[in-house]
Image (tube, each protein chain N blue to C red):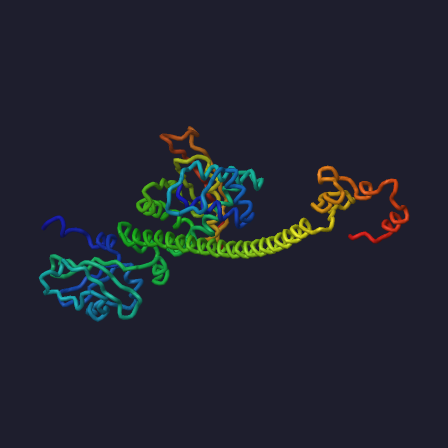
Length: 188
Length: 256
């Protein structure tokens, strides 16, 4: 994963638990990196090790940690680094989700080692969408949930997410798939 | 008629939503849906050269008789808005001209300033990719700045630590000099004590002999090894010693 993800983990930990805890986490995860470079590609295992160590040290379930990381990703990382692009990305949550695949494709052109997740809207209704999430990485569904929640909040709606695994529940050709049924109350 | 000339105008508009279509007198026939957002006042019939001024290195007025008309990169700066269009002019079969243009944006912030969003651009428009490159460069340059700051802080801390070490070093040197002076004084005293004709005894705090000088050895005929650890009283008092003198000596105040 690119350094930006590891920086997000670092930012989330430091913001909530302080620098000392972050140093402990790095030590526990055997990560000897003084500063992550956003545009540099790091091994996925490094990110997973950091997440496991964080979960153990701050005593928080990994799923909740990933969800908070999703919120942090949108509210801090994306806004700070892609602020204007986020605003230009669509006037509504659904509009933004429709533009997201193109955005990921464009970013992937710049970062050759990037393997972004894929999102596609399977069904669209007035107050709900069925979103297919595909990724070569496993176990990050709660990160996506956090991202979707924060994105929805940015567009002034509160969403409810139901997750359905794909029929086989096994990655096909290294890609795992998940269906998110996202619904929200009509905006008054 | 060739198939190319049959492309519906709506298709061209999808590909170039910021287009400007002009007649052979440079008068605007129509503009694309996204450009309408940027130039909301009715522009139909207006001479295109009156809407734009020359951008640095730009080409104005648009001279439709120029032989290399289609080879130029047009940079058109809006007279009224903070907007520069970049594009290419092509002749149409009916002698009109089509400027396939796109706004030149140097930063994603320009999009917000122009009230544009991604849907206003054609999907193929490389301007959006350029924005991502710019964004990524900004991120990298921000990190370089953060790294430089961190290095400066570390340098300042090292300087401070170095200063403190130098201070400690000075103190150690001073103490060493003082000790050398004391040692030299002690050596002088020791020299005096060993060379004097008087008998000199040095005892520890329990009154036991630690050192005697040569005069002591000559006078008492005891050498240092024989008397070391013995109190002078025990050594020098015998049966004929005057007990009155001993008592007087014991009453004398002891040197701390």
